Amino acid sequence: MYKRLLALVLVLGLAIGVTACGTSNQASSPEQAKDQKQAEQSSEVKNDSDKQEKTASDFPNKPIKLIVPWSAGGGTDAVARALAQTGEKYLGTTVIVENKPGGSGAVGLGEVMAAKPDGYTLAILPVELGFLDKQGIYPFSFDNFTRIMNLNTDPSALTVKADAPWNTLGEFIEYAKKNPGKVKIGNSGTGVLWHLAAASLERSAGIKVTHVPFDGAAPAIAAVLGKQIDAVTVSGAEVSAQVKAGEMKVLAVLGEQRLDVFPDVPTAKEEGIDVNINTFRGLGGPADIPEDRVKILHDGFKKMMEDPAFTDVMKKMGLGIDYRNTENYIKLTDDTAQALEPVLKDLGLYKK
Image (cartoon, rainbow, N blue to C red):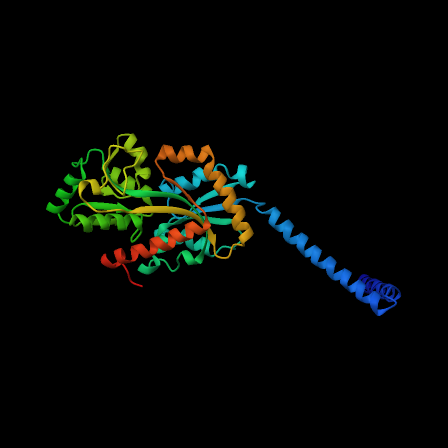
């Protein structure tokens, strides 16, 4: 009790002393008082400016979390990990990849959307953000995220096990027509792009198949190898390792052009089937990341995209590098979403 009273007396004495000093040093005229106030305001503005500049220059000063909303081993995961290895070199901090599969990507994306918009939580944003909300699968869309840049674009590819009875798209379609619903085609989630790819092939070829969803391309590919399903319509890059190992074979590319990694595999259009389905993967984060931080992230990741550590991995895996700046990436997402609306309606998936 005595110590508290003593502390109180000391504080009061200090306050009285400061007040007395302030009184004795007051400006002797209104003009001097005005000058003193302006000087104080100028000092405050400078301090605020210095603080903002320091904050901007300090970013990033801790690890950046890069969330992949699918299982490890798929194309999206490969893009993320190829980028992350040079994070320290171009951003001055490590980039840590975390896989958050579930809900056709909704689990991982929901975590990113709810994160603090400080630039330290990012995600590989999938093309599905442009249309899964229209199917009632996602409670969010691209509008709920900060879109930074595009990284990659890849077409779908119809792929089966190496010992499957079909060697061409024509043979596959002929069998499916004779056996409606028997062929099982896996995808990386109900209503996502690879599901739309299989459904588009089904519709264009006049066949009936059974669609089997998985939480990512990797488990769907594993299901083909385990003979639980017959085929997948994921990207060619996602099956390149298995094809090169002689475990799988690609029957057709469901895009405009043949793939460099499989130059002998024809497109579906070459076989008379009009299907053109491409995925793209971009970099983004929670909505409202400050513009100065978006620029720092854009510039850093662009350099990472240009590094041989990234380009060599992408080329080896057959993943298409497709850099687009923030403005062009936003346009790509909006244009794609608009173009897929009639497809979704034709397939009975459009609910919005």
